[in-house]
Amino acid sequence: MTFNPLTEKGIPIDRQFRSWSELAGQTYDTRDVHPYTRCRVILMNGIEVEAIINSHNAARRIADTGIKQMLALVRKAEQQQQKAVNWLIPGSESSIANTIGYEQVAVDLTSWIARHEPDPYLNQVYEFGVLEDYDHLYRYANLMDLMGERRKAEEITGDLTEILPGRPTIFQHRHPHDELRRPMTVEASDFQSILNALTVVSAEQQTMNFYMNSGNRPEDPMARSLYLEIAMIEEQHVSHYESILDPTTPELLNLALHEYNECWLYWSCLETETDPRIKRVWETHLAMELEHLRLACEMMKEVDRIDPAEIFPKEGVSAPMTFEPNKQYVRDVLARTVEHTANDSQFMPIGELSASHRYFDYQSVVNAGGVPSEDVIRRHREEFGGEYRFATDGAHPIPAMQESGTGEGTDYAEAIARHKENA
Image (cartoon, rainbow, N blue to C red; front, side, top):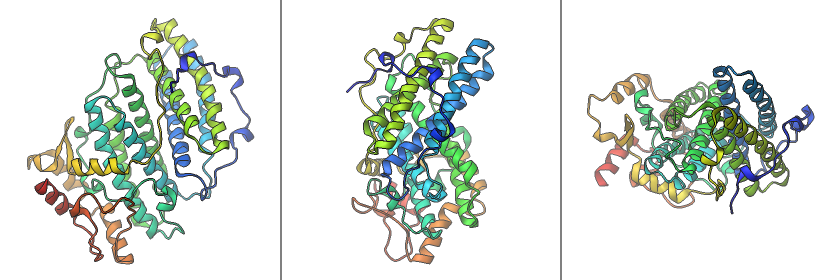
């Protein structure tokens, strides 16, 4: 299976605009929707938001009126696409239920990308991040229970994604200097690496935006605090992932890469979607993106004299991005790297940091008044006699992080230290 967006014909740009009623179409049913349909909607909303932000940023740096007009025209169509996708999410889906969906996207999207990343260093970057979002899913699932929702988190994720502790959120708070990674270069990188990076940056940025704007909606102070804490980690994740992008990429090439990535992802959604009505949305948007890519490539050739044939793979892309279970993969990453932190652009066990490392100074500041991600688990134990977990493939892969069954839970600092000693 291959897909080459450069050889496909799209919808002319002057035929892409739709009425308000077309954009505000029928939502999915929050209780019947397939978990991965929800994931695709969340992902493509984030992809469109990134496309819009990238276009606005380009417009602020480009003086050429013709280019600015092209950007404005395409951006208006992208804005309509974003509305059509985002408005698939029903108002009856609570913020916490939507949050569970966001974290399922983060776990299974990043896992797929890590598994399909040809560069060893970038693979480490993705594996490092996935354990943190895995833990966020677990924290929010416990919060959902405490908020009195009428359903459990597993009813949203299905049996596709386990809900267990990852790298504990309390240990994720690092000094900002330790969130910067080594950048790739477009010319030397495998094209799949470029698509992977653009995809994850977009998804994490949308999660950051969602928590920035919705994290203050709960009334419970503990819920507001948990959103605040994890929102700060999502800021770190955007810094973590965006730093692997090539900062020297010319503006119009960067635009064309974004459009190519959108084509790949809409094609991926089209190939894997199970809901016929939403599949038609993906099909329409793919046809629109093919035209956006054509326009970007023409402008790139005309202005920068860059031939798309020299950048994009001649045969196109060979496989769609697929939302699928990654349970055993995540368990393996947990067993290998749960105790890792970062020092500059490198990853290492926390125990290898010197006592004077900036990590500990930063931790002492942000965790001085208590840690919401720990408080939510403690409160769940007090009210329900234990933690909320959902495991389909056995106990936690790290024995020291398995729930005791007594309602006392686990001291994660000691658990990680013991795991490191036994490794």
